Image (tube, rainbow, N blue to C red; front, side):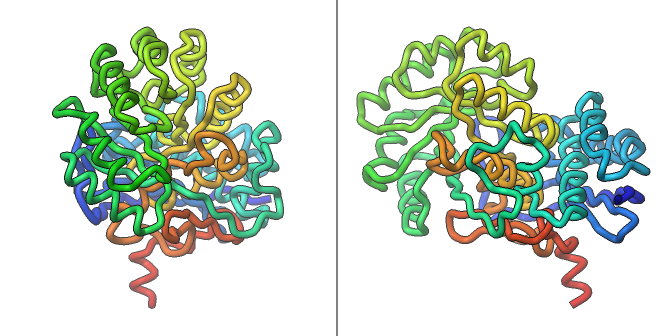
Length: 382
């Protein structure tokens, strides 16, 4: 038995190694809120609330939601009551990013108390989830990730692609906006890396249906050979997304369109996508994300686990879920999950926990995520 006795909130700002540019924003730093939940046995669990236009939550809103709305729900609960507690969180009206932080911290704490790595704990806790994934006694887990190329011109994209190929990445996700010639950009990338590299495109809602179909067909005719195209049109416009899917040969993946199970059911009813990108910050944590993964997989959709621009705290929780579900063994996850967010940080947010080795994110065999504390605090102690 492990009773929750404290909830600590840590706003964090960390510089990026380079600017991150999509169709909707440019960022030079990571703004995030880390949440640490402690029990009466001295253990801690960690979660993260990424802050951005995408999550739609500010730092002050996330901090307020955790301290004033979510902390009262979890204080005094026991990790043996995890399922009841996270279901209450999922049903609440707090911002999804804030719910993600508390939900993930509770799962991390419960896994730590059980002496299991988070991936193994999730496989045991959610029996619908595993499909050849990490077992309860799983040790170190390695998952391949793609690498994102920010919006740029064709020569810049080609140069970046060559660099990542030399670093060992096997899958690249190219961000596009509505400016310029997208076919020229993707042809330049394909020419730079050759036929062995898996290429994905993410338009972040940049195109109208007609423009998306024209661009994707142009890439098909140019022999770019895309694995998938992600969210080419506005979120929630199921008819537009379905029209793009019907108008091209390249598989279509929904991202910003799917936050909840209700969204997923609308997507399925419209036949609007082949794959779905499940992100903890959209879903509101591991519990609701697991429900999305299971329903999507049962419906025959391909499932990719993605992340926002976030640290290894949030990315690690997402990677643990992907590992527990065996999503690295099925398309499109077999090409690499979409979990490169932590690779964009100049400095680590926490000490210990998940880490990157080349194109892989590595989950240790330690209980939970294996996080020792804030990186800054450990630096002060050393």
